[in-house]
Amino acid sequence: RVPLLQAAGKKNSFNLLGLTEAELEEQFVRGDGPGGQATNKTNNCVVLKHIPSGIVVKCHQTRSVEKNRKIAREILQQKVDLFYKGEDSDIFKEKKASEKKKQEKKRRAKENLERKKHFKEMQQLDKK
Image 1 (cartoon, rainbow, N blue to C red):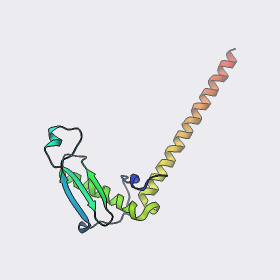
Image 2 (tube, rainbow, N blue to C red):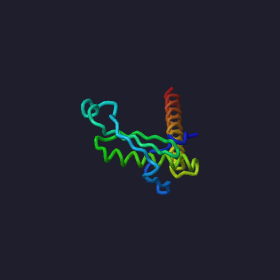
Image 3 (cartoon, rainbow, N blue to C red):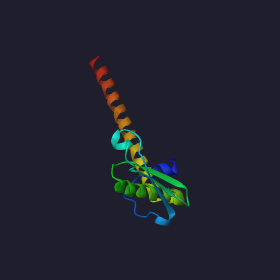
Image 4 (tube, one colour):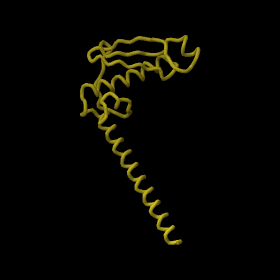
């Protein structure tokens, strides 16, 4: 089972709940992590809070404040959608479908490996 808020981050979801600017609280802080002076001296990390739900998103993916603001809003919108809709959210359904596909791919790879192993064993027996 997928934790609801971890499923956010998927693209191409069209049926998301809308956010209004009145519901948002925005701050600009110094980012952390690698980057040295470019990171340590500029306030280009965006912290966005959705006041009604209390969900907080921190975005420091680029050096541009405007791009970080846009990305933070997209991520927050997805997380708020998951928070209110839960398992009925399109994002949650996409995540479940991709996990199912990944598990099926793993299962097929494991079967192929077993077949190859069995084939090699049969070849070894034929040589003896």
